[in-house]
Figure (tube, rainbow, N blue to C red):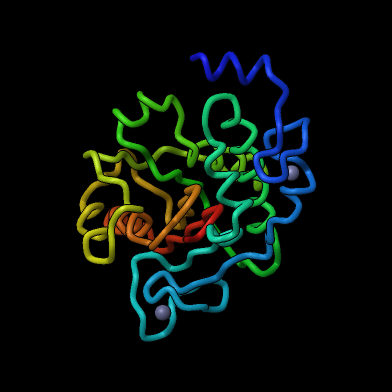
Length: 221
Ligand SMILES: [Zn+2]
Ligand SMILES: [Zn+2]
């Protein structure tokens, strides 16, 4: 609470270059490479439009990311998703995702935007789901609906602290569907380190009748 009050009273400084005026200045945010990261959801190697390679297999048909998480400004955008900055950062991430999806390189065709859900306790502590904010912005910009078709039915540990098989086991069967999805769906999240979480969501959507599941994330780890 004190932090929130102080943030409102004190001048703001760019968390990257230190310039006064905003928590992330225009010139720093403009350095983010928004040309897209396109990797096969199965093997994580480059693929055209982020589609699954012939010979690879995944319940996700395609994954596209605006930028790489390894670039430091992208990490600042994700980390600033707290207190007063969530709306601002959610909008920035949403705008960049929507621009990528609207570009001729993305070739995405979907009927509904589905945010990756948080577990209800995590949502209650945090008060927002950044995937939902990004998803709403993407949906508004592209003129489709954003719907919470999935719930996280159990708590999961932070994926970032895990490796390979553990990540898959951590999110396996963690999601369930609450409403029948249309045939073509796009999942939205802020960051994907591997595609374990997105794949787990895609498994559920496919089992519920989707025949094309793609995903967009702001940053790919
Ligand atoms: Zn700056
Ligand atoms: Zn592959």
